[in-house]
Length: 508
Ligand SMILES: Nc1ncnc2c1ncn2[C@@H]1O[C@H](COP(=O)(O)OP(=O)(O)O)[C@@H](O)[C@H]1O
Ligand SMILES: [Mg+2]
Image (tube, rainbow, N blue to C red):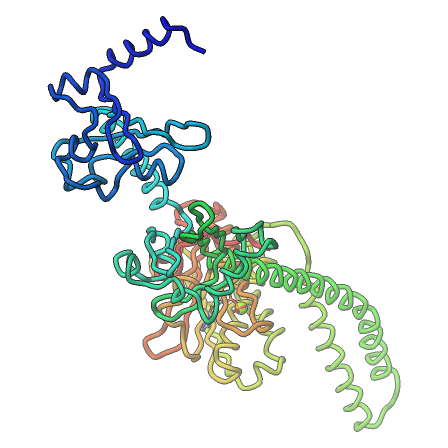
């Protein structure tokens, strides 16, 4: 129990308070008011109705705070917007129930004062703006819809994913339209279930959205139901665009496959070299003994002719084995003066007997006055092999392959030209052909590594390579190599702008 002096102080404190404090009965009668009210109005107010005293009305207001407090049994904040058009002056009341036991006996209304409210509003505005910015700048699409499906939040990332403009979506688009088929219902079902991240939540759910252009875009969805009290009032979804991730995953899988393929090719090369080595000795034996038989026995001319055929074929086998060994020899980069024409002849020798080259006419225009060029011949063989094979593949085994050597117009470089009569290289792919793994060939037919290997080797030689098309059709690859032995001397190692601008793979 409060002492009389305590009560006295409380009353004085309430009177000293520079805000209106009014106590109102449940039937809107003013039961008491502090001095501040009396002073500002200068009239007797007790027993008047609050609506009459405050707003000059003859009946209770529509958004009556007293009724709200009595109905809810809780404090209520009412401000000018609620009371318009009754309030001429800006008013804001914090109303609080006064209980007598469990019943509400009266309601005390405290005039909050506009400066306080303005300050609150400003803070609210600021935090709203911050939240809006947060949502707008989110890298994930943020879409919120009310319980009828009407969209009311649609940020920039959502625009990017869906193709709908924010103005098209907000208040106009139904959330059901951005999911293909029955997607929206499915999401709601999952949201209301316990199993996908707890009731009212859906975590990291892979699904598709339907763009404005009726295209399917894969996304990862995190969503939640927004409640007000017990009632579901809205849903909010965070849409993570999966296109780039899925593309990268696919690319990675392809790269892994291709690496596997190139490893397989490398081990096949080693195997071939091993087999060639094994064949060398018996072939030597066949050649030697055939010669001996031919020389030491007095044979019929027909038998001699047969033996000569054996000798020639065995010699051809030996040459093939020799070339193969030379070609597949695994050595470190070794820059030595070499005859480019011989290297080209060797590569052509190995290739021309293959089925792919049966209907290809080979035009050799080799300049025999070409000086020796400092190269790693092993690697240069790879270059020629790749370019010639590409040409034959482009011509589908039918056409003319021209291999030309000579000096560059300024006579400072050795120039090698490999041209075909195939369909040529489409302009749009020209900038990409030297990219590692770029291929237009079917899975299993091309690895897309050939030209990037070629580029890397030529660059290591301080040379340059240019890809282009001939006016009469067909592709041409031109390689220029330094004649002197300083690899990166006068020549830039760049390739023509029409060829590529990407980082090449180092030679394998
Ligand atoms: N002579 C050519 N004519 C037409 N297109 C070519 C020629 N050479 C290369 N290309 C194009 O360049 C692409 C890349 O070649 P490359 O790196 O050797 O890989 P791959 O031969 O495995 O496809 C080829 O898929 C093809 O589209
Ligand atoms: Mg190739």
